[in-house]
Amino acid sequence: MTISLLLDTLLSNWEVILLFFLVAILYSSVGFGGGSSYLAVLALTSLAFIHIRAIALLCNIVVVSGGTFIYMKNNLFNWKKIIPLVLMSVPLAFLGGYLKISQTFFFILLGLTLLLAAILMWTSKYISKKGNESNFKNSITKDVSYGGFIGFISGMVGIGGGVFLAPLLHLTKWDTPKRIAATSSFFILVNSIAGLGGQYLNPEFSIEPTITIILMFTVFIGGQIGSRLSANFISPLNIKKGTALLIAFIGVKILWKYLM
Image (cartoon, rainbow, N blue to C red; front, side, top):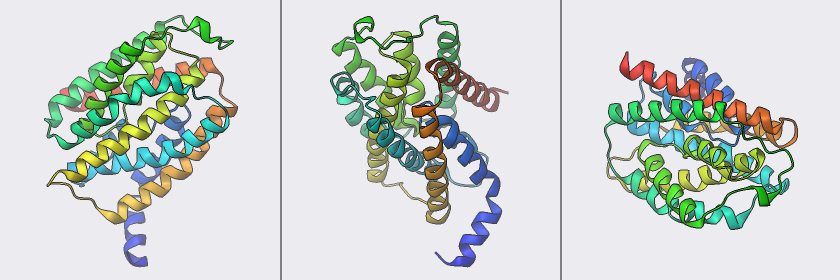
């Protein structure tokens, strides 16, 4: 990668780079990687869909790796509850990444699901302030089932699954909002790695290295900023409301593009 190629890529894609930076800040602040928004932004470029899916997952991994480390430093992980969620999600995300899907159909389904999840999250009255674990509902069987289903869907479309998992955990009163954000971050990390592994083994896998490296560096900086905002400054109520708004925005944007 020469300096001239790097500069040309920066100048010709500055809007995409700026959007990725902003998405990384917003999504990492609520424990997400931003895969769904990365896909939406990249869909407006001339990149092939195969390249787009790989870039979205790589950027997910970069963002939530930093976030996961920060959440761990703040003791926000409950591994006994997290392990059932990822037990089946990882192998099924790998399988989903390997399979081929219909782009238009899945994005319509994704948009409807995200919009419904956002509405339910916004209208739900549950907000935990004290974080007493005895107040939360937990079922290992349900967690394994939820994680497996979300992992499979996420692997197919090229996202980490946080936009599905976080609303579900909020609605089922799984834990405090900050712990849900931390759990979503880890969930996205392992599923993005698994999904990318499945894509890599697909004979059609390919990637555009220059723009990929630039975008990965961009979201690394944005993710560090957003994760620190979440862990230290943003209240549980704002995390919950912010998550709902982000999910609603992406759902409407996807539906507008593929239905109108």
